[in-house]
Structure formats: structure tokens, C-alpha cells
Amino acid sequence: MAVFTGAGVAIVTPFHENGEINYEKFGEHVDFQIENGTDAIIVCGTTGEASCLSHEEHLDAIKFVIDKVKKRVPVIAGTGSNCTETAVYLSKEAEKLGADALLVVTPYYNKATQKGLKEHYTIIAEAVSIPIILYNIPGRTGGVNLLPQTVVDLCRNVPIFVGVIDASGIFSEFAKMLALADGCVDLYSGNDDQVVPLLALGGKGVISVLSNIAPRQTHDMVQKFLDGSVDESRKIQLEAVELIEALFCEVNPIPVKKAMNLLGMEAGPMRRPLTEMEPENAERLLKAMKEFGLL
Image (cartoon, rainbow, N blue to C red; front, side, top):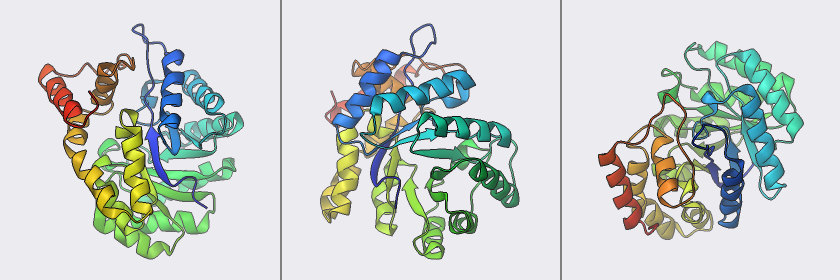
């Protein structure tokens, strides 16, 4: 059974101006997501700036979201690292805190082989007992790509692995993966502009940046497709293209935090080395938000 089906939000981590986590706004954003149909909360992922959190902050943020959600939707905790031992530590602690599942990114910088990826993930799986979703995002990991056979081997041979969020955008590999899997891999889109095409191949949904500012629309895009209203689903996807492009015209989560601040959601600043959005890109984002009906 899938950890979730639908639209999960890759939730931002709001900060005060002094750089500390703004838990008041964090809680408001969690409630906003659930009230608007989001099907799962993914905390401490790429969009949550997990790589700039200390281990203490990382685990505190996971605990906060779990406690705030109170089982209303699944909470999936990002616990990946380029160090296997660190990923094991974060995964074990997240399980103790009550996470429903883990999201574990491929190791970055080290650039592991497929053999190394299998060993890395298997060691993590042996340390925990809750479901793990693999995270393939080559653009963030030095080009490391979880190949279809590797994903299928892990999910088939280690039951704790239930699926993968894939942001590679390589649809031929998505198709090959699902053909090889014969139902043992739950595939989620890691790209907001590719949700409907991936659903057409048999995907379960999306882990979304767009959901931070448009949770109802993102949920409906997926749900309408799953309910058989493909034309309506496709309409939402196409209407969101300009906004999605604006949300990724600078590195995530710079634009989505800017968008949230424009909406009065007080996501705060980024942590260095990320910086504020360039003025011309901020104008582009503002225009796209207005055209999509958010402002």
C-alpha cells in the first residue's frame, strides 16, 4: 500500500530574520496545507533547506511537524545524507519521533556507483522499520542517477523500500522502471511541470514545491486525473506552467519563499549561501502569481 496517493507538499522551513526557525509560521503553514487538501507533508527536504540545518534543528523540525499534523496526513521525513552513517542516524531518530515514512536522497558530492547506492540504501533500511521513499534528483547530486533497475531491485528485494520520487525528468527511464517493477515501485513526480504525464504512466502523485502556495490546485490536478477527469487535470497542469517556470527561474526554494512572502505567509529569508531573488525574476514571479489567480 502506498504511503500516500496524491499531492504531497515539499514544505518550506520558515525562518525569522535572525535565521532561527519560525515555528509559529511553520505551524500556520502546516494547517494551511492540510485545510487545502494536501495529501502528505514532506519535511526537511530540498525545499526545506535541510542541508543548512544542524542535526538538532533538523530533528526538531521533524518533531514539530509530526506533533502539529497529529496523524491528519502522513508525515514523510527527509533524512538523506552523503554520509551513510549520518543518514542512518537521522533515519533512526525520525522513526523514534513518529514519522510515517522517510525520504532518502541519493548521496551527493561522493558520486556513488549503482553498487554503492544499493549498499548505502540497504544499510539505512536495516536500521529502521518504517517505509522509505528513494529520492532521485541528479541536478542536486552531481549527476548521480538512480537507474530503473537499481530502484526496482531495491523495492523488490527490500520490502521497506516502497517507491521513488524522481526529479530527473527522463520519461523513458520512468517507463522502463514501471515496466520492470510490475507494481513493486510507487513513482512520484519530483517536477511540478510533469505531474500529469507521469500520472499517465501510472505514477502515484507528486511531491510538490507548487503546493506551498497552491495546495488546492495541486491536489486537484492529481485527484481529478485519478478520478478519470483527465481533461480537467490537464487544464490545471497547463494553466500552472508559467507559475511553475517562475518558481524555478532561480534555485529552489528562493522563488517559492519569495512567493510565500508576497502572499503574506512570512516564510522569511533563506539561509546562506542562498540569497534573495533578483528583482527582475521577482517581477516575473509576481506576474505569474497574478495570472494564476493567487494575487
